[in-house]
Each structure stands twice: as structure tokens, then as C-alpha cells.
Image (tube, rainbow, N blue to C red; front, top):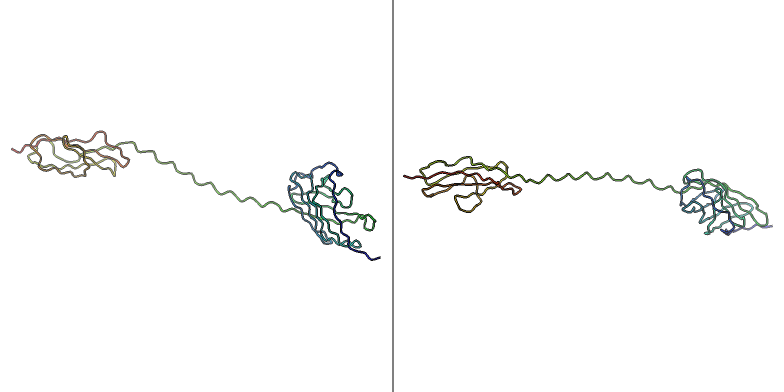
Length: 238
């Protein structure tokens, strides 16, 4: 009698399957397991996130003389019990184990109603792609250095040269400095207003009387000398 290829459609009835029991704890969930039989063909099944069900099962192009080539697939859920799962009618069955992370090993068997190919079995090793190793975290950025404390110290002003006592000329030259580099200066003579100035400061055509020169330094942070330097002298021409 001429034999023809047989196509099996996997019929799954979740209500007819015993209560689920998750496989070994080191199985990768969720995952699609893919394997190839020694006699050719491929087997795929998807394990649910909790590891208790097969949510898809596919068998493709498996030659089993004298049964021909079979192909079948189901997308209905099948409970995993003791590392095994099968359809309610007993037409197909996978029994094995999940011995290592991302791997399942076992046997696929199927049954024909007429008994022609009863209990044919094929051994499988199916593997799931392991997750890629996480990329190392970039090193933390270097800590931002704390800003230097604000400069709140005023500079000290010094008059380094200039007239004092009694002088018999109507002009005067004052030289001065600050305890902080980069300071600027303001000067005044008697009751005149403060004005920006530089060292040396020259005064001409002064009257014959007593004079007082004052100078204050201002540092780069804007702090002003609270005790300006002063120098007094008297001009007497005759």
C-alpha cells in the first residue's frame, strides 16, 4: 500500500492537562527554545515568564519513515508537569529535563490513531539564547571640586613714600601699595571725594596750609580696606 506524508496539527486542551509545576529553578524564563533532531527537522517551544507553561509549540519537517514528514504547531498553552508537556489527546508529547540555564533536553514522541507509527520517538536538545552580558557601567565622573571659599578679607593699604612734617614746596608725590596683588586704589586729599588713582599720585599747586592724603585699596573680590592709609604734612613756602 502506498504511504503518504502525514500532517499532524497539534490540538491542545489546557483543561485536560494536570496542574502546572515549574521546571528547575535555573531555567531561563521567558525564552524560545530551539532544537534540531538527529534525523533532521526543528523543534521550538516558548516557556512562559513564570516557567509553568508552554505558550507555543512547533515541529517542522521531521522525516520518520514509514510515517513520512510531519509538520505541526499550536499556540495554545500547555502546562509543564515534571518537565514534560503534551496535548490532551496524547498525539504528541515532550518529556525531558531542564538541566542547565537556557537548555532543555528530552524526547519528542507522537502517536498515530491507526497504530502504524505508534510511539515513534526522537531525541532533542533545545537551547534558548542567553541574555547578553550587561555592559559595564561607565565610571562615575570625577567629583567636581568644591569652589574656593569666597574672599571676604579686605586688603591693607600702605603709603610707601610721600611728604610728612613741614615741606617748603607746593607739590607732593605719594607712592603706595596693597597687601593683595591685583588691587586697585582710590585716593582723596582733604575733603575732596574719593577718586580712582594709581601709584605714584602727584599733586601740584597746593596751597600753603596743612594737607591730609588718604588712599584705600580694593582687592579683586571687591573688598575695600576699612582703614585707609593716611599721611599729613604742612606746606610753608616762606
